[in-house]
Length: 469
Image 1 (cartoon, rainbow, N blue to C red):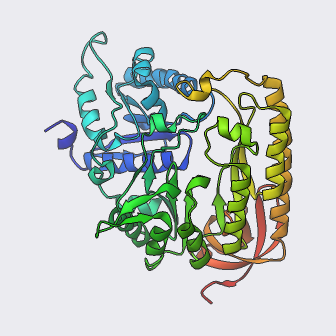
Image 2: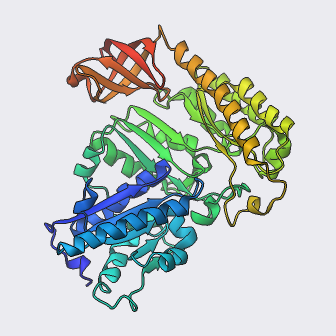
Image 3: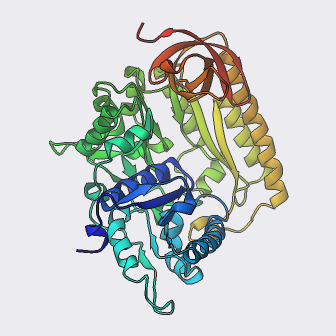
């Protein structure tokens, strides 16, 4: 057995995990903590007391790898301080930057003990044991443990179940990954290269984890996937189950009160999933459905496999099934070759759709993607001006959407103590933060709240009655 496998259960080891990027990385970080817990590692929020620091990285944002190297420089100093005081600290880099640049990380940052990709964190205890065996080697002989393979085995089947006490500590809402990877190969995106091909978890696995979450007090689950509505898991009879049917099955779990999912691709928004929005009250009327551009020419260059008209037609079908549906989207401005008219087409699709919120970015190249080799790059100053105009339009729509809530009574899941004395806070069905005056005994349930005002990023409410009343 390895050293880590025989570590006493009450060992006072501490792990600090810094999470970058998307909700899936948040979920992955939680599961890393779950994988380490049986081996004596407990999470800490204080990096200075950590025996192990893990950076769970994201490759989506610009200069992602350089930000990781900058953080590693600070960790090297902290590690030196700990060693001078008679302690030690191991350092690991996980996630998509690790997957894409594993060998480069090990070469540029010898302080790193282990590097592993998103498909390998179920092997973290073994990797850590191997890294520990090198701790007393001469620096010239020591090598980082690197695991960036795409394994054939199902990592979820090898992970321990989340500890109930850890799940309780994570609160009333939880993420649950049901799908990973992507087969779409959008020309700007690194996901197929860092997360691999699309793979869906078996239905029983998803339902079992959902039940454990609900048993621990979770009221709202968000299903996660790089392309979550491409979910096709098998049930106990060997049938292929889509995301819509999975939502129907999850809706049968007693105690589960809200269900969400993200992120979706327009090509995978099928009739079954639209019907689930029509039929299931617990499936929240808020949908993140990225379009990226309103120009068919740019959409083709992006390899999005849909047109602007097809996207708008899909929105019509969704709203026909669920008239109160609110939309969120993603937009990239300044993709190579984007002309003024292409950008105007994007503004047009925003006006025609009407978004409750949106994420928008200037295009930046990602090494290894087809887009990185395209010519006709848009000058930075033009990208900046276009992004400003797009965000101004989206902000107008978001402000109008918030204002439309005033005077309505919404079911709000009250989750936490508010920032002001005597205040509590929660989320509306549309994922808006809602603040209201109320006692802490409101926390943990859905209450009817009249919306009486708005602020920049949230709503102000007044308690009407409990939803159960």
